[in-house]
Length: 210
Image 1: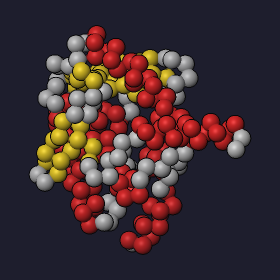
Image 2: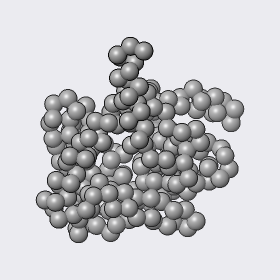
Image 3: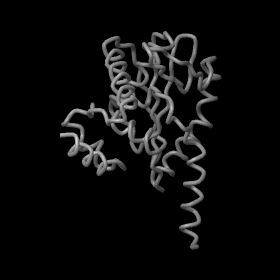
């Protein structure tokens, strides 16, 4: 085994330790991306390649360093977990930092965006409603430049209802063992589908369904 392969295998091995098994639960983060992909992950496991592993390890390292510092500064706690019940569905929520009046999410990225990504807004919006907090902060940290940008966010009840609708769709799909319809708008699917590890399976299932 060469050095390159040795390093890659070790990085993937370590990254898998940070990947929580969510096959039997629905988390907020399952609902704020493509729920069809979330369905496949729960059915077949999380696909891990060297690129994904490196991103996960970098993100985990930043969170381990940064989150306790932010929590201490704002008199909050890290990774407080709560189960939100929506009918028969239980939704797990674990924000990065929770304070008495705020939810804070830390995100690593290649470049900090000019405005928050819609999936991150939906994620922190769900946390605001589940934990009954009035304000959210989304903190972006660049992987390449250590550039940092913070955005404030305030709750949107209509968006939370949309998230709950997706929870119901994913729950029914898992119960029936049938992939749910894709919730991503056609205009955005190129971005989501381009590097999706389940793209070919998704296309095959779509062909068989229709």
